[in-house]
Length: 138
Figure 1 (tube, rainbow, N blue to C red):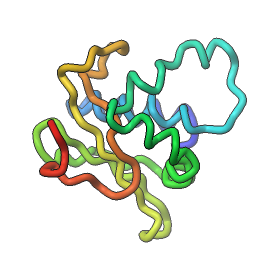
Figure 2: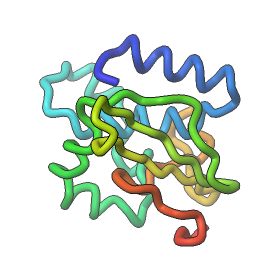
Figure 3: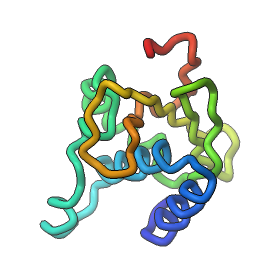
């Protein structure tokens, strides 16, 4: 997922399949880790990282920024997400090299306020290996 067309198609597909929230959370999370120059208008339109990342993961995402970038860049978002359990979804970021595939774990946090319409309280919890539902404090 490296351009606007891929993001638009991913969101349209997710919306059509009732999986908009987890995919929207990731598509709003991903740009926070791109090292590109954006216009002020784009930067101002993006929600804060805390609006799309699980609160307990914010520090780790910042500390491990380079690893998070490496795990996402050059991969393609595959749909639909896998619903691992109620309130837990896994998104596959596919790569030509099967050893380079990444799983993004997204969780639904009803207690977290939504700043973005359509997010439905979904937040990115982890990037890398999948987090098993029994290891998540829901």
